[in-house]
Image 1 (cartoon, rainbow, N blue to C red):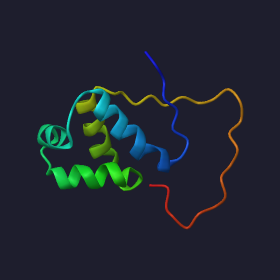
Image 2: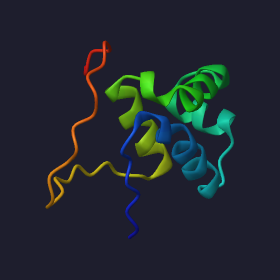
Image 3: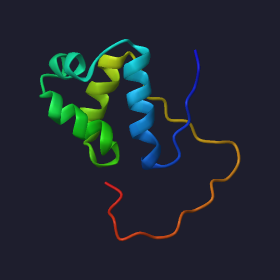
Image 4: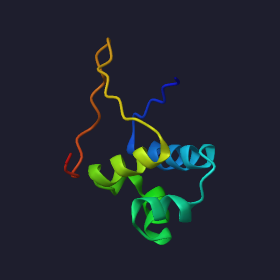
Amino acid sequence: MRDFTVRTPEQLPAMLKGFRKQAGLTQAEVAARMGVSQQTLSALERNAEAVSAGRLMRLLAVLGVELVLRKPDSPVQAEPASDKPLW
């Protein structure tokens, strides 16, 4: 099993697209399994940082990917404050 570390929301789109391609699935196939349109899935892949946790979890399940949260041993550098809400 291989781990893929995501530290920024901007990393998600490329990873999700990579997982889909590795699974040998088209956007249309994944969309059908999720019960959404291909256009919705395309938007989700492009803007993964804006997707709901529930929809992200459904996509990961379709792709056969699990989400693991791990607290690093070393302290994490705080990112600059943002106007965007965390949730």
